[in-house]
Image (cartoon, rainbow, N blue to C red; front, side, top):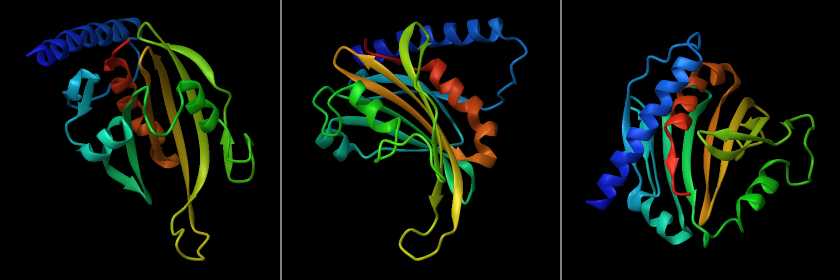
Length: 200
């Protein structure tokens, strides 16, 4: 019951934020996608999700690795799929020490480079998501379509991430799409980001 009440209160706050954003930017491109509310187990977070996208979870891995997340896939793709991931990394998660560790390891490649022939990482920007401090990461890369073969066929992929610190862990909102579809589905990611609420 408490989880339901928490989600309802968070949804109400998200609705107000979304309406205020629309008033502040009346000329923004209208997103005609239909959304439904989603609330993660234990009220770790809530957000709107597009009703015509597929939603999946790996609950056993969530509990094992202490990373609670949902995967959203668009009904359209271009060689690689359009995906949005909303994740809560508990303080005792198996992958990252904290949000700074996540940012450090995702703002350059494994060699510490920010740009080469196949990758480009933009500088990390501090911003606000709602009233919460967030860090924005944007990167572009060429992804091999058949890594198990000798084929060099690749697809241009662009990604945008928001990393939000929390007292007990951190959150990541991650959007990845082919360059050809990135702008088309960015309003969906923006909507999910504006509707997102999580623990402080």
